[in-house]
Length: 276
Length: 292
Figure (tube, rainbow over the protein chains, first blue to last red):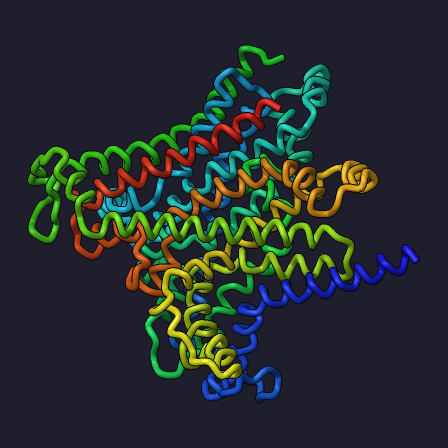
């Protein structure tokens, strides 16, 4: 009897959860589906679900029209470069804060976090002025540095929370055995820290990939990543739903796949370790 | 056990991050502050080289007394408040649902988390065209199917539409964090309450909700910081028209469209102050966690 009730309850919960999940996912599903239709089929009334002739022509058109690969490459370079650069700078910092904490460590961490809260629009003009001054406007290196800086606090924080979980006794033992600081870092800590560093890399790659204020405002033709590529579709133009869908699908596919792997790190990274 | 040598090594290792962030914070901040006290219209020939005219607090006064200021504050509050309300309430419900035993939980989680990974320009465009378009959008099809007249969402219900789009993007975040928090709830506590005969609503109110308190606060604070600076969603959908001009967007227009740097910078300083008020609360909570 009791078991019966549980099964029925499980069926109801399952149905409810799946319904909600599918509704929430629908815009993405619909975009992917529409990308395989012709423009005429895309605006068919009633909407076509699976009963249409699947085509890849939109992908070809989008690629031809705006050289998708160039934008994709910019996104990869910007997100990847800024993340690597950030990790390079943040690892030593997080390391020393986790293993050689001083009275000021907490203040420094909180101050770093506070730089993240500076509203971008408040400093848009000074930054673009500096960019003009140093000929950085519409260059990948300039944008890479900006993306690195806006994510640096999150990178430091994530690494810090991971490093803090590595027991300090292991370090002491290594030190007792006569390991130098370099050996200690290279052979003892790094292997233990790799999972944490990997999750940090993943989450920050996603954040940098999706950043849509600086990438829209500091780029034109050369350094523009996929966010700008998509924004170029914002003015309506005749029949363009299928093309828009193809462009959108191409822009989000890589990160959707990466994102699904990073669910757990997401919570930890974005709450600065406050929820685990 | 830190030795003197390791302390100075630690300081050196920390230096690059600290120096970079300090520069990233101070240089633009100081420039913005300086500009906010000057008449700075690049299109009329003002430039730093020729010296900017000092105007005191004139820009601050003008920004506050402009016709668009209070509506933009109102829009900002409605937008942030609306998105917070929707994401937190639905997030709690969804998290509780997903915490129950069900088939295919992993897949459902993936479906629900997906919108968070869609870049803002894409989600704004997809919603604008594929969902909300008054002729060919899915909503228009649905409305016609039920015999109603399709709505021109981004014109007639523009602010609600933007709130809907942004909520769709942030609901996964809220759900995921609240789910993580719910899963850490001791199930024995709930069972004990159930044994004592507490009805579901009471169990929720007195056991689950207090447990979620901290997670909810964190969701609210972090989302507020991101929502205050929502940009791409407005840029792509309405361009600030039809009552969707938030404070962020107003400043953007002053600086970029009308090239009034002094006035825009004064607005920027207001935005920075606003964000810092929220930030202080967030820091307290995160800071407490550091001691634990």
